[in-house]
Image (cartoon, rainbow, N blue to C red; front, side, top):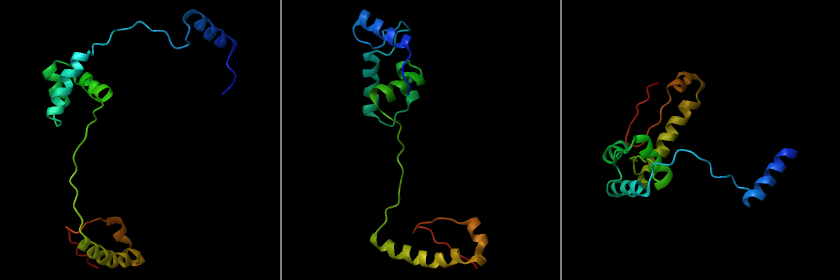
Length: 133
C-alpha cells in the first residue's frame, strides 16, 4: 500500500472541517421498505413453524420472496437448514468394519485388480457387498 495522493488527504481534511468525523456522509437514495412491523410479523411464523418456506411467508405478508429471504437472513439471522439422517454406529460395528477393511485392503492393493479402482464404492454396515474375483 503506497502513500495517499495529496488530493485524497486534502479531501479528508475538508470533510473533517465540515462534518467533524471523517465517516461517509449520508447519501440520498430510495428509502428502505423494510419496517420493524414487517420484521416482527415475519419472526412470528418462523418461530412457530421453523420449516415454513420463504415463499409461503412472503405470500402471507405480501412481500417478494427475495425481500423475505433478505430479511430472514440479514436482519433476523435465520439460515436455511436441512435435517440429515445419519446411521448410528455401535461398538459392535467396529469389529465388522475392521473385518471388512482387512478383506478389502489386499484386493485394492493387488495390481492385478486394476479395474476395481474404476468401480470403487463405499459402504457401511447396513449393506453387504459380495466381491467376485
